[in-house]
Length: 260
Ligand SMILES: [Mn+2]
Figure 1 (cartoon, rainbow, N blue to C red):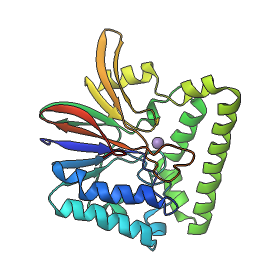
Figure 2 (figure 1 turned 90 degrees about the horizontal axis):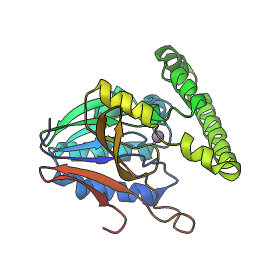
Figure 3 (figure 1 turned 45 degrees about the vertical axis):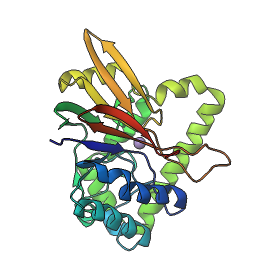
Figure 4 (figure 1 turned 90 degrees about the vertical axis):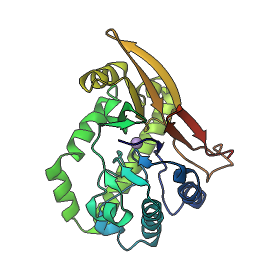
């Protein structure tokens, strides 16, 4: 329960995107300090193959220390795993002084219950992805994966990523409308979730379609707020993007992190 909170997701941090990382560090020192809680709704990192593999990376150390500084300034920091960094565990979370959230989670902010989820579980039109998700979220599979040598884990993760990028580019080229449906949350999955958790307001990321939706299904209505992904590193091909959602006693609003 918090009087105010600020949300971000889908930064996809990696050493090869230094401007995005720089904006994140700036966000931690500026915008985030005005709230009681900072809530990261998944895909903070481009990929994660285990806390041990990241322990020696200077970049991941730097991120952990920057998040820890926010927490030491008295702001409660939460992390909900996304589809790319769901293997982020207690070891790294403790280093960054973040509390790991389950997906989904209901949290009371400014006296209102908010349903929080990364969003990938709601993309039920993509049945192949849902099958893949079921396998990789299985604790036994994760345990076995984490027993593999680091280099092998990185190899598997990058081959999975390049396969999914190639598939995305193929569907974009030949069937953009199919991809549009597959890459978004479905009304039926969203309705089932808001009904089961009995919540009228939700926030998620993952789809890279920032916005606000007022939705109705089966006699139930809800608000759905979607976070943007971040990219400040490819100004020649992608307009810089990145936002945060702010909840205070005055309500919810989107903070544009590009022009500010
Ligand atoms: Mn995601």
